[in-house]
Image 1: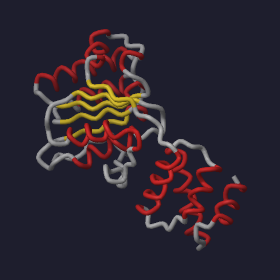
Image 2: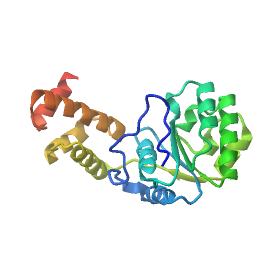
Image 3: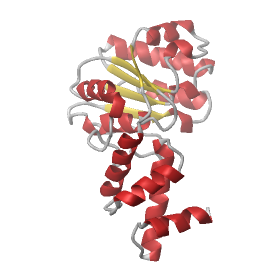
Image 4: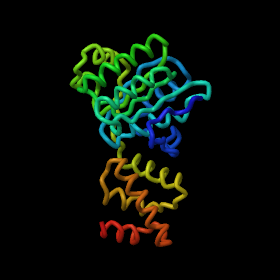
Length: 232
């Protein structure tokens, strides 16, 4: 693989794989994205709120693509406005699978949309694939270039749904295990009761607690976690 083409300073999350993703009500999109890694041409749009797992899934796709295929991942929310996104689109159209994260952050920027349309058409001509994440479906976004908006509106669109408490518990426990952490059941339940319920916030909190526990040489007991939360 000409592996993930990334803007300077950006790297994929090592733990963001299909196996570490708890699907909950999102089994359909998980199955569809797994199938994309086989190389069959597709244009897929995945949307949902922040913390719903969109970025995790895009990273997982990149990690699972076979060695013979080229994939590019662009985290658009981190790129300079308009010209930065336009340059990224222009340089990424020669891959087999282009993954665009947070595309809605550049919608409404004329230069970016023109470059995106050009990249879309180039991928289409070459029978290559495009995977997009955004906060909303394509029809709900304020496109300045109607042609590219209509193309995406005709793509496969999947809406991510939030995890229930049981699935969040599983996801938190699985992430802890991936970090080599022993997260007791009572501590996991305490975190779910006391913390923001979106997975992005929970994962960041778990990472912070991991660092604190290593520094203090303490296990992740409820009293230890309670003391940390009371300090913040």
